[in-house]
Structure formats: C-alpha cells, structure tokens
Image 1 (cartoon, rainbow, N blue to C red):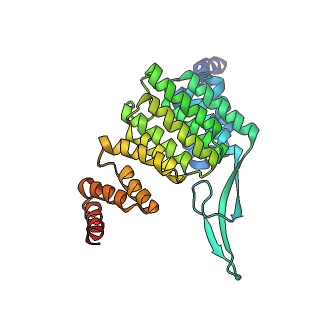
Image 2 (spheres, rainbow, N blue to C red):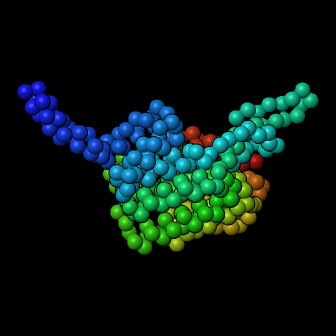
Length: 310
C-alpha cells in the first residue's frame, strides 16, 4: 500500500515538474526585467543572466534586444570630471564653476567616455530590434540618441542615420509606432527631427554646425516651406555673421508666418548687431504687430517709438 501511494504521488508530480520547466512568456520576461532594472539599473547585478535566459527562450522578441541595448550601452559608458577653459561643453553648463585664490576661473564638466566594443554590441542589439520591428520609431531614435552621445562634438554617423530616417519617412510613408503613443503624425515627426537639429546645434563645434545645416537642408527638400528648418538655416548664417544669407531665410519665413518668434527676434538682433536702424525699425514694427505676447508687442512698440522721437 505504501509503495502504491508513493508511485501515485510521483505520477501526480510529473505534470507539475513539466510545467515548471516551461519557459516564461515574453510578457513575464519583460515584467521581470522591468522590475529588476528599476531596482538595480539596466546593467545591474542579475540583468545579464536574465537577458540570456530571455534570449534562449524568445530569440525573436524585439523587447529583449532593446533591453540588451540598454545593458550594453550602460556598461560601455564611464565618466570623469574635467577642468576646462570653456563656458559650455557639448552645449552643457559646468557641474561645478569655481574661481581659485588667484582669480583664475575653473569650469568642471562631467565627461563621458565609451568602450568601443561594448558600444558596438549595443548598436548591434538595437539593430536586431529594428530588424524585427522596422516601423518602431522609438527603436530608431534610441540608436540615434546613443550615436549622438558616443560621437560627442562630431556627429557624423548621427547625421547619416537622421538623413536616412528622413528619406524613409518621406519616400516609404511608414505608419510609425512609438511606445506610449497612438501613432505619429507628420507634425510630430517634424518636431522630433527639429529636436535633433537643436541638439546637434548645441554641441557647439564646426562639425556639428555643418551637420545642423545639412539635416535642416535635407528636411527642406521634403517640406520646403517648413518654418522650423528655414529658421535653422537663418540661425546657421546668423551665428557665422553672414547676415545677408540669414536675412534671406528669416524674410522667407516672415512672409508666410509673420508671427514666427524665432525669425522676428533673430531679425531684430541681426539688425541691431549690424547697427542698421532702418532695418531694425522694420522688424520692430512686425514684432509690435505680430508678437506672441503682449509684453513682446509693447516692448517692440516702445523701442520703435524711441527711435521715431530721435
């Protein structure tokens, strides 16, 4: 009787043992990864083991490769503090500005360095995610963000990725997906591209300035009257003190969008820098009429009145 009972218990246990050996679902792996990453970070203790198990069970899960991208990119990145004789580094303010006892200015910046091999692994992982879900815009943007950080003040690969993204958007007309958003409108896509233009411009190098110009020009081949990118080209030439070219782009914007604040403010600044009172009065009149806020309009009118009293 005892032996029969033992055998019966063993037989009943077999389905439970088989069930315990079944792989976790994709959603369960994602849930466990999310919980673990929140506790220890995307490259913390235990994350790599979980990722390896996830890949063994679901080798075609794009969420896995996004998680592995985050793991490899985080591991590739280290930082140190550096004293630089500049007011900004890659568009950022110093984390600690100081003046020594001799009156010398010291600006301390956090500088990030990247391990090339680990960064290559991160790039490969996000590439696999994109292959599995080619219309997931957030995957493509994750790769672009990583490249922008990795290349620092020389965003050459970043520019090529952004140009390719613009070409794909306007030539193939994909229906983009983005985590947490119900589709992507044309206006939102242009806003994303403008955000990258601004980020590149703020890097502050000659290479980044050329990339800023090139990306703005590429976008204008597809949406030639878009004030965002026309303003960009105006700003590119304004910074270089190429006022004739800058004015051409700003006037093009103001002709169709007289309340565009970037074009209005920069045109006034440009005229003031050139000490061209007649030109400044022209733009002040536009600001007094079309300024975005009452303060903008009143301020422009007050300066215009002051000029007219002379």
